[in-house]
Image 1 (cartoon, rainbow over the protein chains, first blue to last red):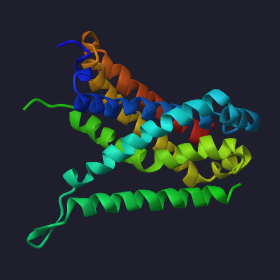
Image 2 (cartoon, chains in turn blue, red):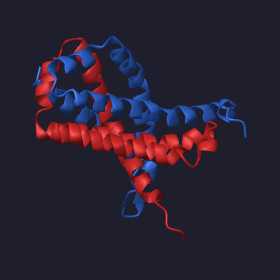
Image 3 (spheres, each protein chain N blue to C red):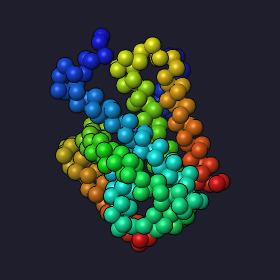
Image 4 (cartoon, one colour):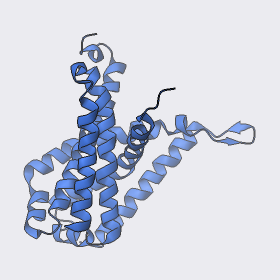
Length: 117
Length: 111
């Protein structure tokens, strides 16, 4: 099979985009690793965060990581099938609960960071 | 049935997927947009990273997503034409994630 099979259909293409989000997930983890290597160097730490190339890469990575989040959370009802008595808890409700948890967690992290301005 | 390491790598992939899904977007916003707009200073973030809970957070956000990348890239790399590397690709991918995890422990605990 030629390695361009995923360009043949939109659904194949979106599958490939989802899989390729892993490059941005891994790339940002690598960035965090480089960042923590500078923890004892105040100038290096600040210089890395203010590097224009680093900022541009993060702005590119953000939509890809958001796509990872959305595709991951949308799969939660498939993984988590909950029964209440005889009836199955609605898949929409399970996904919505995860989106809500994501929002709450994000706000809490932003709140903690904002105390260290 | 033949013994396989697959469940270990899949579990780490899955855990990394959850961590990246929940924590990466807000963390990217903090390190990219917030810092560049000077809403939060680099010095403030560095001070926060002095806390052991913040260090645990950073460790989890480095290690598990690296395993997520390693597992996904191992398989998608094959689909994109790296089939000739099928023997070495898992070693390189999981090896890189293990190395990154070791370096994260070094920087966050010892250095």
